Image 1 (cartoon, rainbow, N blue to C red):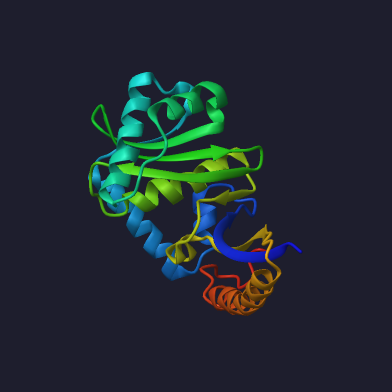
Image 2 (image 1 turned 45 degrees about the vertical axis):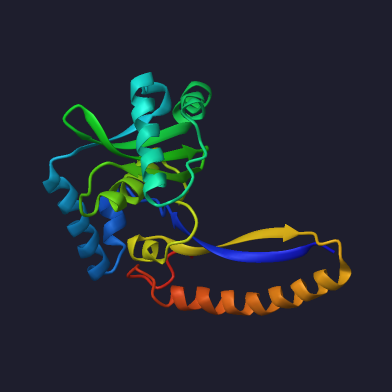
Length: 222
């Protein structure tokens, strides 16, 4: 009686890349060129980039990281539900299982992306910034994560829900699954029929995305 539903996220898979350059080499020429241009824009800004483990961050740095997260949520009209205390506890309890990509302007952290990792997978992300630099969002949220995953030998990078723009940056569609129980039999029957129709649309959507794969090889996940 549980109803199954599938959705789509965009995940990056490590194919044994030696470094970021090897990953770029697997992409089509156009996608490779675009990523290099985005990274060059950030490099030209003069910001200093780093990936930091949670255990290495000071109380003052966690305050700044949380402030950037909170301000970015507020600017978009969303509620920043996670508290400064929560952020600090991440570093205290999880240590380097928490990773933060940072951009510094001098001594000040001006942008961050927050990740969690397991033994095989990097998960993202919360993003925050006090500056507008072309390509900075992609650099911290995607490219720094890919570089970290390659260096650490992680198999997969899941940067978060939604975002077809991730496809052009090496992330392929991946199905996610959930199950739901509805007690009312007529309501359950109606939702089951709606889910069956939705599943057909999702399958067509995934196939269309794969037809626009950013990789030079048409089936890079095989």
